[in-house]
Figure (cartoon, rainbow, N blue to C red):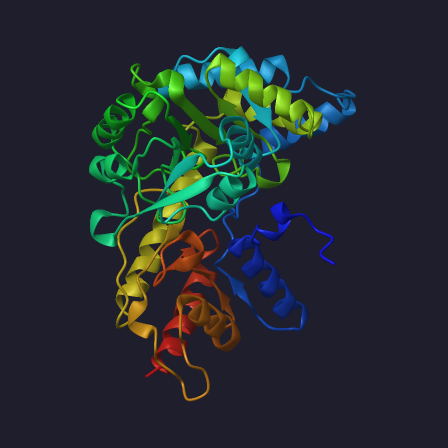
Length: 400
């Protein structure tokens, strides 16, 4: 007898978390594993933020908070949107959640009815399709190519829209490709959406501060669709606060209120201590802050290190990402090859081969809707990256 619900049986384990789990298992056996599968800055949370968290404990700010977050934090987020992004969201339009992942899930669960279609450009973050499934929606993938820097075109979006289309979700800067949409590209997409008044845009901007092009652009800046954009962000990536678990959304009053109701019946408000720490981060740190620039400069240097090393490996093609901390190389050349013991039948096989033979963990492109690629995270030290790329090169050289 199947005791579990169809809902959970239809969900897949996160491929990024799965590879991290396998890496930990190998490490526990004594192997020197370099994990390039996890999307987490290797920097520590800035001191002023940690001090705010400690002060919150000492000041006994350890009680329940409002479901949508403390008023000061929602005001600070509102001010941040205004000052950094030119977006006019009132505090009442902001819902603070237990990570940006919950913010996205809230949006889907509040918008999607069974049978509604959600457009998901591929490559996509691994959890997007699973969240759509959880909401009983239908995923409509829109493939992109390395030749176009993995960006979806307005024409592709228009062609994918049907009377059942309810939303489109994408990230910029993008996980897993690092692609960043320009203001002109976003405006062209916005004009397509504007012609279909029943479609919402879920804009995942969690990598906002990890942008090598300079100013971040949000699709919510266009007033002709702003009421149908749900802007997702959080403190995890930009402030190196992954474990604090604070994300947030900004949306129309109707959507924000619905998400507040949903969250009130699931998790209630996020951790009070994490909110106080996040308040310090959002109020006092920005893309111009020295703490942020140190991380950004390090990530950009590592990006070039990885790209230079990949260029030295035959049969691999990679673009130059403009943001986030990933490269997404095309590795189809190695599919079908063998080292005499292991036959590489897919990108997943190649990842398992690299983990087994080189003790390097990466994530297969198929997990992101793009078979034939790998996602490599360079959110680790240059020393680790140099060693990892040497191991990858050596392991791939054994395939023929």
